[in-house]
Image (cartoon, rainbow, N blue to C red):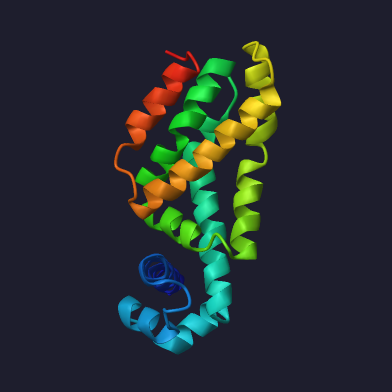
Length: 180
């Protein structure tokens, strides 16, 4: 019985993620989610309480998945490897979790979504400063700020399908930072 409940809950989350990412959170009703998941609206409310809580659950579980799948990329072994990993991170993240990142981009104005993204990226900043410092960059803090802005722009553009040459752009950055 518990497995059936869990699989329905997961189905609700998957359908909601898809609808929120494609139609938008505001334009998606719990009725549409219920129909898509093949469950009653009451079951959505039983599992999540309300649509806001469902969204919160989707965002939190999305970041948990991303962290568990990409922890190795965000581990510091040496400065060049870490910089390479950060440069290719936007493409890798979007390729692995395209609907989640599309939803995150759509929710860039949402305070909870922003907070979760900031928590996700916060540990990266001091490590980038360390990497740029170890590589002898004149202003590691400024280099870090610049790279983080580029990374932020790249994942958003890739999530929206606005660019199709993310890997080539990452290769260009790799050359610019002499990481070849």
